[in-house]
Image (cartoon, rainbow, N blue to C red; front, side, top):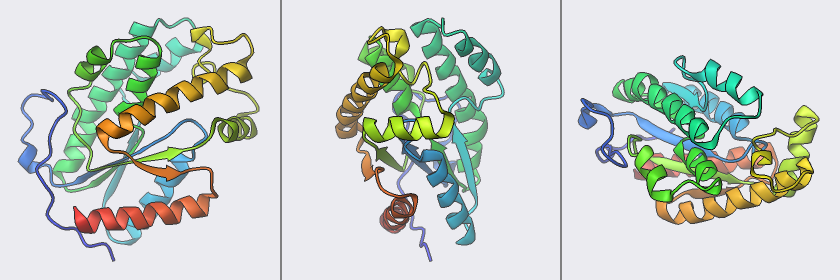
Length: 236
């Protein structure tokens, strides 16, 4: 049985969204970060099922799910010609729309919001593509500070195997092909994922990620997350 204790007042990273009464946000915002192939979506589904069996109302959110721009963003990515700044602003708009219309209302209703990636992936992608770190941090100053952030760290070697098993191909953007790291997509994927992991290592110290070894089986990772989640809920 998970015991929910009183938790501190929510905060924004920066100025946040106008007109939001933070004292009314009584729910919990929990983020699971990690690359494609890290098992995020599977673990979100398992956590959601477990929490609901424990009697908790949950909502799950993720990247490119906004009804405002998600379809346009997916279409723009298809041609592999999207500029870095345009892509950054597309993703920021997608995030802001979900924050205002899904995340905040759910927290106001006392739900546990499970985020299948949050601003950290977006920030890491921008920074490794040359965006100014201060500009990126300012862009996402609208974001609420999560109650907990779990980072599923998986080695690039395991990531590439999982992605090939799932789709028999690698994603252009997740391979960093737009960066000109290598003409070979496999080599580019390995280099790009190492760059992303290096940025996550830096951000981990700033944003206090709880690192989880994602190289293990689904069951092992799920057990680990449940134990850490229960501890977090009892101590928060």
